[in-house]
Length: 70
Length: 207
Picture (tube, rainbow over the protein chains, first blue to last red):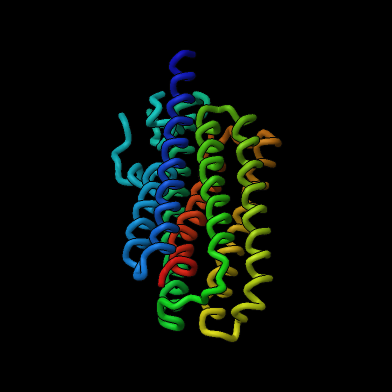
């Protein structure tokens, strides 16, 4: 019961952290586009970081390449 | 069950993680079905990614990196925030489904669908402005309307899939495949979100 409660807390915390990181990166993207005259490279680097966060934490892409637990 | 197994959906001991214990043979059969379905879903996502990549490449071929000065970047940022928020609710819907808490999962599924509808409302606003400022016959308009329409259609199908998934929970049809039905819809939703992560800078930010 305690373990399940901890699991829930941990899952929610991971989701919130990833969400916060996505928000910060999106804001940086916007800032780069508004402030820099040539922002293409910068915004795509930031977009790649956001993509990795979604793929890894939300879509669990690494689990596809992991061996199953015995 | 470890939190990691709950998060990633890695199966344990021949049964689907997050679902109730059942006979080993039935568990193994369900495991095989889910493993095959999961691979199929990833292949589907890969094919969809190729479609989006083609449209994104077309934007640069047709209009280069130019964008109209009248483009409403603020609205673009707002709908991006809405879609990213829906990713969190979708993630929580999947996480609670794995923990067999389908009631909470259903709440987050509806929250995700609601945010998806809000995103679509934002796209409609964007289209209304766009038709006046950069009509589809212009170079940028062609790229903008085709790419955003393609994505909006995926959001719409995602919303429909979320509603179907919620209905399956309501009908109690989660026992045979565990949380897979929620996981599949949520993965698709995250992909739609991922596509927007690339589309947003492609249309609104590059210069």
